[in-house]
Length: 388
Image (cartoon, rainbow, N blue to C red; front, side, top):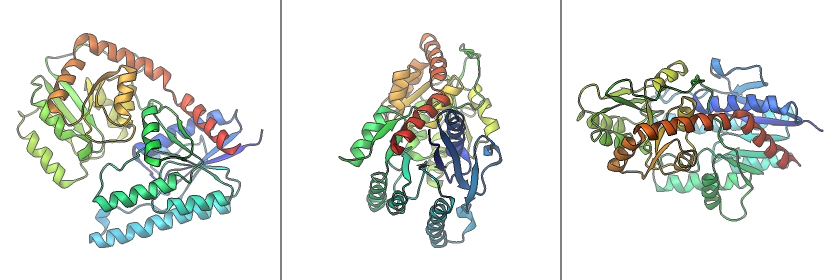
């Protein structure tokens, strides 16, 4: 069998996206040894220390992205971003040409307005292209024109690919609708459960006190619905809430502070910053329920899989891939978005002893099924299919 040379392209050098790549590529490299697949990574030069591994070759050749705080004005920041993305993606195309022998590029991200032209260039060189669609729609658009331009670029780029990957059947249907007739094959590779320090044995499911702590985890954007959860918390006198993750927008930060000001002291803890990997297990261990009250979403949630890794039941909005997963797996409750009354009721139902025990048991079953090894095998099947 001819060895199939696969390159994963993930410029993001820290955080969940980069960790996802490490988990997947480690499993692909191991499974690929028996299936004639050699995998490597192209990423940025500032790859986080904990993401380096000897499991596969790493080419940290892309320039790092300067933070917005490094610029004196918005105009300077915008000009720098445009130049940066053109330079970064151009460097990758040059690397593929010099490297030679790359059969498949598996993209985890790419600059939308450059994708259609660049991916056509790769295909002219005989390189097959695959893209994992983590988010069909942007979490937030600046205006109507931004939405039209960005979505048009994504649609044009994704239609140039040889195959697309998503993590649920529902997202496959949404992506097919977004792309329209004649789109490339869309494959479902179920997202594996994170191996980030989760418990190996069933967790204690009985409450240790009269109060219950809820967890809202991850970067805080308006579409994630923390404001809805804070309103629901007012209807849950025996529950407290920890929100752990940096708030991206100053206006939204003010809104969260205003809403939380109506709660009694100690009921709401806000950790408004990047949460390091070594802090994650403690946050999940001190909470009994993970809440994902998103108001709009067309993707799969990494936080949902973190909850699985730590054996924590979930209450999630019925949007994107979240509601589908929670419902099918039986790991918690699903609720309509933008409804704090229904959210409070769903949280109360999820905390009922029998429902809670059933959900914990379900998280343990799902965790055994959704392994990175299985995800890697399904991904390699796609590599082989596009290269045949």
